Image (cartoon, rainbow, N blue to C red; front, side, top):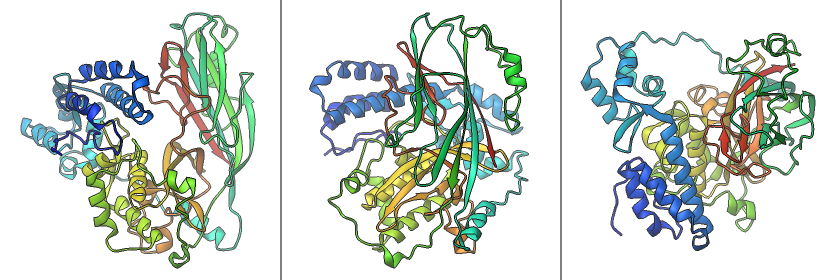
Length: 491
């Protein structure tokens, strides 16, 4: 089979029958002809009856990837040069060429123009040490990364259950003045998922009725409601009071957002729950063989459009795992390699397989790093999937976050956080070094397990970055960008 050189790992090598049907499309994307590629995809999707489910999924992913890349890769050469010149006074055209060629500055060719990632300068200083040395950037933060792992280890060392009461508030302000009256807004609001680690969930306050809470078997936990648009519905709300004097003392006051007006929908959901930590000393010799006929085993070891078994990743897997036969130790080797080799950068859209991109360019956010771990585990027939939501810390710090889960028999599903683990991977104490391989503090707030569809099913992809972590707002005209303020508090 002839080899095709693909820019940035574009998808063509899935074990599905649609490969020959997407060759021309891949060539268009490779050449940067995004507009023509979108037209080609639209034409193909008009004849869904002639396509398999896998073929439709591949085309829809390409469609989403193209749109997301166009949204995020918006800077011209001049834009980047002017911004970078402010931080590197002796910046030269040769520097720009070098950093473009080694992909320290991330870009795509889009319809004949080179477009750089909108946050490429920050990421440049994450991945390129030489560029960083030429700035005044210093990292003076002395963060004790061992504090929360040790807190968990010490409590469990006394055979105790370690739990915390977590409070979280999601405040949304969605401007609906462009949506016609009587049209219906559909909304999905993040909600902590009830499971063995999260319980006693209580909604403390909300300002909208007729909500539908998620069922326990929903892998993505979202409150759902529909709202018929009425441009007068907020006329009685005192915005200044709402933002300047929150109902809870731990909610930080804020200035009224500049776009808020009488046609802005204000939503607030405040809830609390009990979160348990997990710590278990696993003996590799106690790991039992998998039941390969189990449906979950088959589901979470298979290749998908989001976890592809590319030749690059299969070769990398062999390099990492070597001759190791124990599944637990294989997964730990993968964990260690990612922690040591993948630099954290901002989340971004990429064309094609995210895991291969992350491995090749040695960079990625928490989702990308977790996705790489999952793909490499599945290549080794070790069940793995994504899990995520937020991290909520006692200092009222909070952030969107995702990590992985890996399954070992007889221990079940265990959390694996290669992002937090990267800060500890060179620690001398192995309890700390491998803490985030199979254990977690009570500060990981779980909203979703697996890369699952939101329930009830949304009509459009979330091209503005909304999802199980930030909420989703859609109407018949498409997806809306969520504007959300989050506050948290650990009792």
